[in-house]
Length: 308
Ligand SMILES: Cc1cc2nc3c(=O)[nH]c(=O)nc-3n(C[C@H](O)[C@H](O)[C@H](O)COP(=O)(O)O)c2cc1C
Image 1 (cartoon, helix red, strand yellow):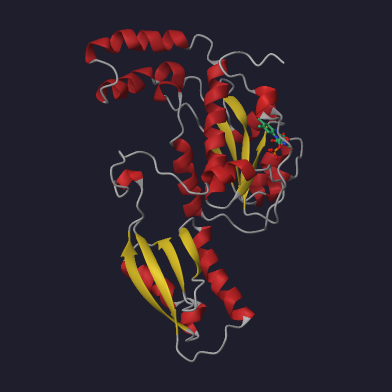
Image 2 (image 1 turned 90 degrees about the vertical axis):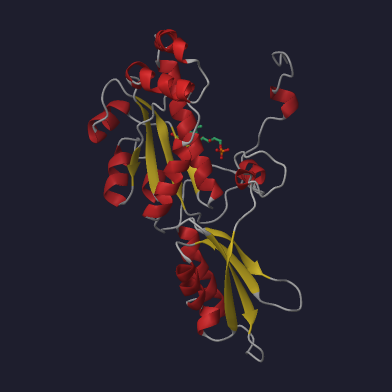
């Protein structure tokens, strides 16, 4: 989706902004944020006033219409000027000599440090488009041999969330969440989809074509005990989903306390499947304080087991 920058210029002689008008402007911005389409917004802090909104819009018309509907513009205290914009990131080569690589988010490290399990959320819907964006990001998670064995089940809305909550020893955070995803893994993939994964690796040049049969046999033998791999790949998927949520301003939780047979029965999860856990996400209703962490000196070994 293309990016647009909306510049808001104060109208000469306009009355000072009333707090109620600023709140309406913020709610307008929140409609963009709720769909994961707000990149940045804020006022200029010099004497010229005005502000800037950067977001993702389907077209220039959609960006202009968003700008025209901004309460500041509707009330005539500001005018808007919309320009197509492209965020410089390694992937589009706009950062000079850097090779294309996954982009970096300036606040991502800070987000990781400040993350804390959140179990209460604002009663605000997580829109379908944002859910798809989050799932797409989670589906980009790494997996062994790129087999992608996950089969997540997305629950949204009270009827589905309450069904899930009953399978999780009634833990209340499930029902507060905007969405909760059962991170299930199908170990049959470790057998049935090996040719597909090997062909993709051969196609991408990682393995030579004449290695195909040997690699298929090797990968299948690797999974004689697939349980540990199911746990690992499912958890990686779930955590990528959680981090995707954090990156757009959601908060969330991991939940491992559930009744697996009940969950299988309720959601039609086959006996062979492994359930790594449940990840819940929702819009924050306050701020959680991170719990204490062990220090690096206490737990990390540099070059050897941290025997202390
Ligand atoms: C795999 C896993 C399973 C968890 N299961 C539950 C759970 O069933 N119920 C719960 O309230 N919290 C659960 N948690 C959250 C942990 O209690 C929490 O991550 C831990 O106390 C550290 O707090 P923090 O996430 O705020 O840093 C789980 C976390 C993980 C990683």
